[in-house]
Length: 352
Image (cartoon, rainbow, N blue to C red; front, side):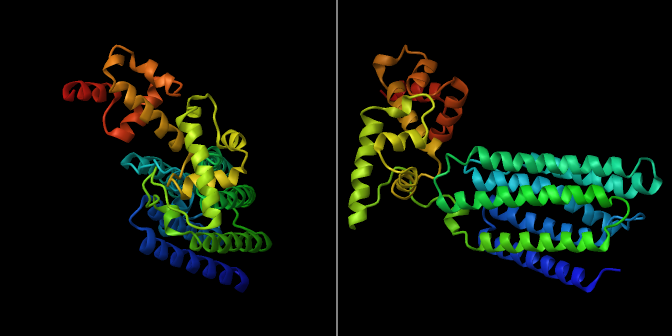
């Protein structure tokens, strides 16, 4: 029998998560990040319910389904982090495979292995916890790895919350799951867990509700389109923009190996945050690597269309422009132009 405090915490948490999912679908249902955020909220609601119910054998079918959805929510979190923090991410049908696999393993454990006592209850509990933590680790790793190249300030701040809150809650939840596996959660532990979950959900709801639409949606401005600032600060930005343009066009600094926004800011003698804001707000880029690659691809396009360089190998053109290998160059070039470098060269030869 759950205490009134536990019931209140879970009821409030579940209601808030379902409401959050509905709002996300209403406002951002057209994009993958919005749909995945809503799915993650619903999976978290299932987790809140199963965390209260506990895991005492026998498990009813509906309870097993909730546990499966809760366990597989780690996969949804991984996909959500990728969609939110990687503008090039596209949701594919095969992404449903790991979710279905984790959910099926959880159902197998709840409905077959646990009731039949085929294994020590700790073994499947540890296995499912490790699998969930692996996907959470992938999400946190993705969030950290792409942090430095992110130019959207709201999204950079959201990364801090995602990394810190996820790491803390995942560690606490994994420890509690292993401690109470097969026995249900003792009252004090269950209450503490529910309180932590409620706090994380409230913080998550506040963070997501403050996100502006352009943080989830690609920026409306076309990359390379320069705004026309009129204020004094705008005039300063114009000078910085001119200096950046000279650095990219004249010195072709994008060719340098290992160029980062930090090294570029040092060359321009400005704080990194200011350069990041300039490239994002004035030029419309959301990712620094895309900013660099667009300059590299423009140089490569000019070389591929130049009749005097018709015999120059594509890989030479790619490496001269700043790419380190042919594979990334081919992918970036096709993503930008819709054709491969070889096809682009051939089309220009035909039209010459």
